[in-house]
Image (tube, rainbow, N blue to C red; front, side, top):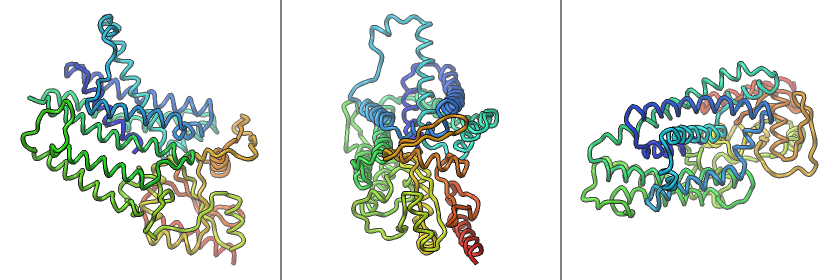
Amino acid sequence: PCVWPMIPLTVSFFLKKNTSRGKSIRDAVIYGISIIVIYLLLGLAITLIFGASKLNDLSTNAVFNLLFFALLVVFAISFFGAFDITLPSKWSNTMDGKVERTTGLLSIFFMAFTLALVSFSCTGPIIGTLLVEAASLGDITGPAVGMGAFALALAIPFTLFATFPSMLKEMPRSGGWLNSVKVVLGFLELALSLKFLSVADLAYGWGILDREVFISLWVIIFILLGMYLLGKLRFSHDSPLEYVSIPRFFLALASLSFAVYLIPGLWGAPLKSVSAFVPPLYTQDLNLYAGGQFREFHDYEEGMRFAAENNRPVLIDFSGHGCVNCRKMEGAVFDTQEISGIIRENYVLIKLMVDEKKALARPFTVEEYGKTVKIETVGEKWSYLQRSKFGANSQPFYVLLDNEGQPLAGSYSYDENVAKFAEWLNSGIEAYVKNNQ
């Protein structure tokens, strides 16, 4: 989900390039290859130089997220027709063919770089595991192949998105329709930009974009999008809409229906289909939804002490404020009656946020892979615990422990299969009972 905002940007970027069909396909292929190369080199370089947790730190960094939020809002305003984002005319007039070609390739390369950078915030368990392997073993061959394959899978659909605008421009009488496409992209960009503001807000605990505020903004945005598609809302560059076409009608119906679907979320409904985007339920001020709520600890030592005193096994949830797959697991799995019941009645849940920016009262240093690493924030402490004790650096990551801190079963990563997760939890209970007989 973190790369979704790049879809409208990609379409609009290649929509503005006045090139032939052949050059458009060439540019799209260059875009795809750039994604693969940048993703591979950037991921491995940052990991080997700064450590396995640095990409996670970057994905929740306030400056990075606020800049990208502002960038998407500016693009949305541009799509609405307020202004065009172009180079100064004197630059364009003085460029010769060679410089223009170079600038075009650099702009494609920059788009690919942005996509690669944004995608690191939700690359999933496989990338986290590969990065730890690269940092711990010093062997980049395996991680390079794995990340290259991952980058290829990411690049293919975006290469297709890049070729899509050239097909649009070949359609007859497409001028007014293309303006409508840009406005729709603007609404989507505006909605998706809030995700980046939310990540910074959660990681730093500002409390300015709680769940109901986020959902309220989305409801308004998608109602306005529906009104625009029905011709009830016009922007400066839009021509009068004589009638509503069938595609516009169904798109408007989908947008307005989605807005109505979101409304119960204002009172705590889980909204499982968009749980990866909206802030988590614990930011909700008014919550009439009772399911999936249980006591949880946010400190490893405190939670382990409580579990030992009450003779209960421990479920550790390595999570993150900016982890979209964590939100999906919480909405699709943890909020179900079956799973919440098992956890509430049998486990002590310890949720450790690896991107928590709160400073430690007493920073400390550790030796990791031959380097001295300074641990200064709560998130860095839990990230180091996950790497050093469990050999992983991806989220979500779940571990079942006894009261001595020993594993009761294998670890569990992102998988929304409720039955499988329940079976895993029950296997931990059985192992705990057996060990304490």
